[in-house]
Image (tube, rainbow, N blue to C red):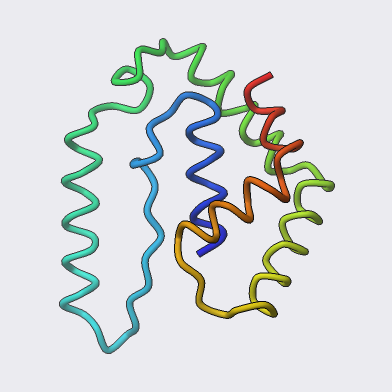
Length: 118
């Protein structure tokens, strides 16, 4: 779930609530789980309110921040670093805790993530 951690960091970095994103696994044989995940996430996003306005951003500021996030995740250096981190995490331990993934992401991508705040 390294992708989940990265996207949540990016959202936080541009001032959007990271709870607006969720990446969960449900197999084709888990229809009730899928329905529950979608229902819960829909309720969560509905409770957060409209994108931008619930974060106190007008339309133009929201657009600028989303453009900044797109530019950030499109950067070749970030993509290579992220790919290497993901490969190493899989090699080193397979299933890692969310905390271990967050620590590895912060350590390996600190320079890139700092650009979001600058």
